[in-house]
Image 1 (tube, each protein chain N blue to C red):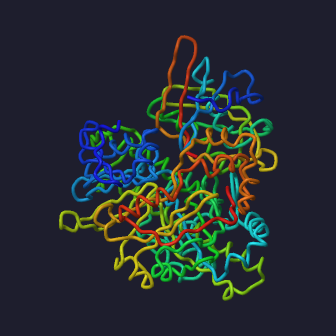
Image 2: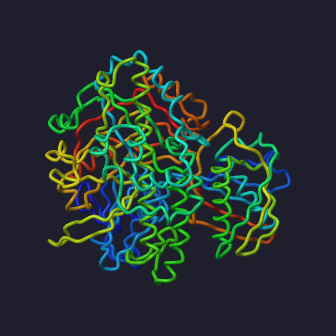
Image 3: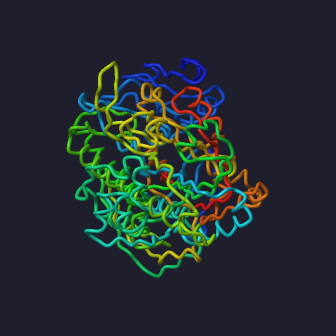
Length: 483
Length: 153
């Protein structure tokens, strides 16, 4: 397969037009030779090429180094379409878990202050945060006006309901709400699935993790983000739960019909789509925005309870704890953004599926305190190694529509992971490394064990060296709650 | 293709053929068999719930009627599994047995027997978000049907 690729440089490979029939643009995969070997073991390169056939796609079908096979678009894929030139909107370019994303909290605490009691923290968080299959949220949304408010206002709804302060919104992508969500284009099924699940973590790779800052690579930017060495941080990874899953399920059916109606040729049913200026695309966008807002409200609630747990376990005031949001980013989303392409400003539908927005210094969407340094980029790793904070760059704006990677990316299937974990006590192994874990799912710890993932440091190395986001800090896990 | 658990339907429905959980990098795949297509559909449901929870302890206490329609048989399979996910998430219902009463290319009617989900009794595993169209296959050889479906977890 390699002979069909063209190496651009050490961190960029091209999948040329002609790799498969119907490609309108090339594919560009941000990857080094080592990660390329792993990528070649699944269908992800084919999926990059498939996405390059989508109507209105601009510049290239992009993939980040954490790329792995998904449905339609690969996880780690970025596709931008020109909405004024027949560009499409595709639910498969967003994924089932709409606005699955990550937020990072910092604190005034240092690692040694909580290390002796880390078990208490993990147990308290596990008890306080609804987690895993069938879990129900502590906020039960009432049918009608209240649930519609969540969809329209996003994280602002959570703050008005008492879960946090308005300054949190400044440090949330899109201020925790995309305008234009329409509660009327959402099925009753999505409402029913969403109603009991607001304020729940989920399962699988979703987690809540207590970490400490192990390394600082960029002092100035770390300081702007409020990060310092040995500081205690908390990372929360969750999404729009059953609400978003149902929105995706519903609109894939709609888009199947749209593909036929508008005569679009797609190589994979999961890439079903509709041109931006059609009712199908507009309705999906309005529903997708509602799901994105649901997810931001969800992470805001989870953060609020996390802060409460820390205060209670330590019996200290909010001021002493100083736990504040560093930033919140979406990983699965499509957004209408303005980008410069061939010296012209154009409006694009940027699909990021398992990719993070990485806006540069000076960008209008950044809060004042980050304007000079750029947007924080949060990259969770696995529960045994590390996670990273990076910062967005001008180069990302020029090359990747302001996008970068989103995580480690799976290396082993769940089956392979369970097999590799046979006869081992993963929680004990992690405990020996000083990491306390609790999981709701019976096999979660095996499926999610560190070696099931690529080493996030290798992934981050690629985007850093390619210049589409640069390293700021590395955090190591101390305690993990898994779904 | 590796098989994670053979014969996962142990006490699930002894009369049914079987299902296998298959290896997919980021998610979970399922192959269900059946002498009749409706049996294969029923086994697909059994396989999906075996990924979500420990199904051995489910008893037939309650019953729900399920009815779905779609444009073709493949879409109908996806719609059927997605309807059961919806039933689980909104009613907390886990099926011990699915009886498909009617099955055409575009329409399915079933009675599902089971009980309310309990995290102590049924021991949760992984949330299945949806059944997907990715690599979806419904095949028939001389004697039986074989269904392949990939689930997003």
